Length: 140
Image 1 (cartoon, helix red, strand yellow):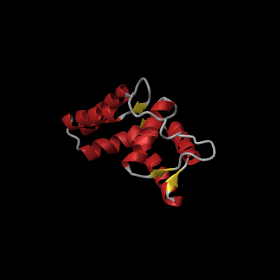
Image 2: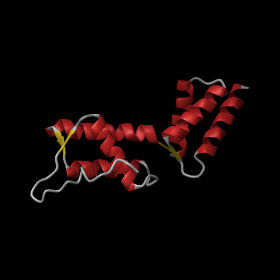
Image 3: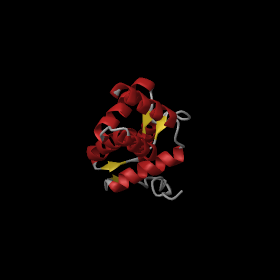
Image 4: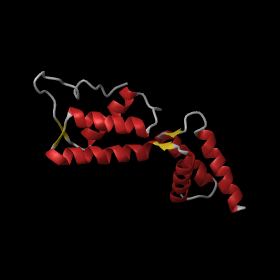
């Protein structure tokens, strides 16, 4: 019986990601709520989601953002700032990890939010006075 409930939950997850193979934060919450209704704990639900993501090559937005945050943190700790080249490298990693399912402008916004939230310094300016970071608008 438990295996049958687990299989129903897996089918529910697959239905949620059917069109894009991507689990955003809202979908993740919805999936976990369904798991709770079926008798799973949040931890058990996350374990099933992660296992399914690994087996079916699904993207979990929260995990991708954590990976990118860790990379940017290393850039920031390296010399105290994140420069344009490091930002571009992190953006490329972000895009690759999301498998192209999130528009680049949205990834730039999310990356900027991660940097601002963690209060990391950014190096702008230089010879030609580029304001590459400031130019990224946070509103949609």
